[in-house]
Amino acid sequence: MEYQNLHTELKENILYVTINRPLKLNALNRQTLQELAEVVTYVNATPEVLGVLLTGSGEKAFVAGADISEFSDFNVEQGEQLARDGQNQVFNAIENSSKPFVAAINGFALGGGLELAMACHLRVASENAKLGLPEVTLGLIPGYGGTQRLTQLVGKGRAFEMIATADMITAEKAEKIGLVNYVVPASELIGTAAGLLSKIKQRAPQAIAAAIKATNAAVDTATDGYEVEIKAFADCFGTSDFKEGVSAFLEKRKASFTGS
Ligand code: COA
Image 1 (cartoon, rainbow, N blue to C red):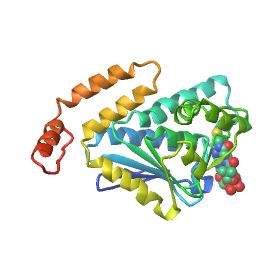
Image 2 (image 1 turned 90 degrees about the vertical axis):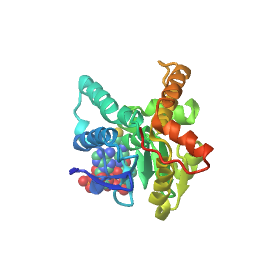
Image 3 (image 1 turned 180 degrees about the vertical axis):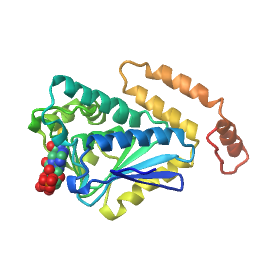
């Protein structure tokens, strides 16, 4: 796959995706969002990919937000389209992918950058990372799901404080409030994120997809999450991986899953 603003590499069933606009602190312009949407489609359609590690190039930023220069003259209709397309094609698509995405936050994760990290299933941050939703300083609010996902992750009080003050928080604080799963020295960031994916990729892929679906349903107020869990649980019984997992346990050997 050739992209203008992303660098991708498939290693041992993990797709490493690096957003590569370091001079603009990896800000999400239209082209980058389009390429991220293509990555999600590719990942869902490619059995060899068992997980995605998403990071930013350079040492300064994961992603410093949506590209402000692209929407500076937008009207109400264009603003709505921007948010709707972004949510549907990228942010919700990542969250609803059948493969796990892990964000390796290597610096600033601001605005759309933090929203991108929150759309991922797990987040690891380097000690120097700074996280925030500064949209109100621009006369906006987060539009790529940030008001919803931050509230789900850290609770309404903390989410509102971050959104309304526009303050950045440290990686340490982010870990304390449950916004990131781990904080590690910068030199260990990619290794830690890859380690999580290496563990997950040994599990039954269809069970992982079912776990993503069911945990997403838990925070979808329009859906009965318990019902989604029942169906997803039941579907697992129809997979070869279920038979292999149970046989391996009974035969006291390591399971070898095929994703079928
Ligand atoms: N959109 C477009 N360009 C951006 C950007 C964004 N969200 N964030 C950074 N850039 C660009 C800057 O314009 C600058 O480009 P230039 O060199 O061509 O002028 C370059 O990236 C470097 O950023 P700079 O501001 O010079 O770095 P800094 O170290 O002084 O500050 C930040 C770093 C992250 C604090 C600052 O860039 C910033 O506040 N960015 C915007 C964050 C934001 O509001 N995001 C939400 C968007 S909805």
